[in-house]
Image (cartoon, rainbow, N blue to C red; front, side, top):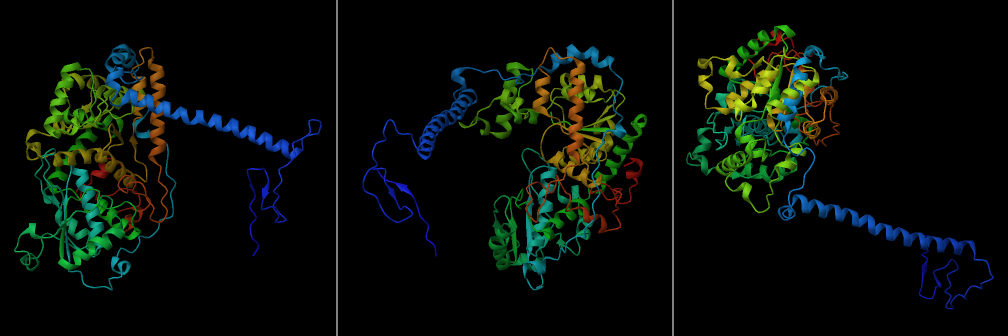
Length: 582
């Protein structure tokens, strides 16, 4: 084999390892002043000079990021109190001032540029439907068809849609482990304060029957199994699974314990399964979310009535309406650590709410609260006024019917009035339902959220104003229903706050920017993330395609037109989809 030859210069400028294998010990003589410098040596000299120049410039290039980072640390870090408050463009809530300045122009410009029935221009290209993967996991796990006699108990924590995520993941994990799934328990949380059981929110019979043939579901652990644990649920082995656990983790760490004891309990169970799983496991998530989870009869019955009433009140726009998920409740404003126009009194009030609900979480030494930076980075909830100005700027006129999916708005007399001025046809579940109809739901936040979820799901336009599980699940469900289009307006909040602090801005300029924002939401609404094999980085619940498309063909309850009777929220015999003209 030919050996490699390495060239290296020694201290006497001699060459080691030259082509002839010899080594010269004598130094090279100095060049004569009258002799021309060889071309090779000139190149070496130029190379050394350029290298020196590059190294010197590199020092400055490396120094600049350090100076920039130091500046940021001084401005936003613990030292900001020493150097004083630094103004950041867009950091001050001046929307009420802008509204007062532009109010006459807004109301004078009542001619709409957008028809609600034709808001969405982009269409997703239809693709060849692929059959669903085989979800019989026995062959995949190499269990040789052994009869499943092990039971999985999970505790779903959080609000309505975080619990929904946990339930879908539980179905997938039960299939993965070849276990019988016990109807999930719903944790009572100090923040949500909802004592509802699974059966209060979802139809248990439908859940069990829809999963038949994929995952066996039972209401309780059999008595003969519980006898081994003295009929005490707390005696059952409880496992704390790491967040976003992989299939390999479940097979290697959880399955041996399950096989040994015959039953295990996993608590908590939010986000305990990775998004990247084999297709046959991903399919179980799809079936659970869009086929098995149907709201209970009391919820779906009232939800149908609310949708029908919204359609009736939207007769001037062909039964089409806009749903806005407005996260401007007191606890959300406090949690966001944002300030509006309440001054010191508002700050003191929010500090008290944070301390009451989250104890010392916001007083830790490493926690720096900067409301101004929260605002410019888009972390602050939009106010009702800002939502109204945005929608008016996009071209929705005051004949547009708007459903407000929200809890109790913070200081409603102050914050909700401008939105009602711009859009008089503003409705909530409280205004659409009678007190008698809502009475069974009072005090149960998840059941109330289920009503909002259904009315928002069937809207022509959905507007999200803050992140969270509710809009993410809803966007995914709408993509599943509407041929891959989320039909959702996602505001560019960093851009919006900059516009809403410019006192020199004209209404025409604001409208132009809002129409561009609407167009961007339309374009992104049909985007489908690239999924290669099982390398999925996005949420299957927000982006259900392409994996969930195949379940249209699994049952007669589904059709390729998207006119799905069983929405996971409405009664299977409901004709509400037809009346909503979806």
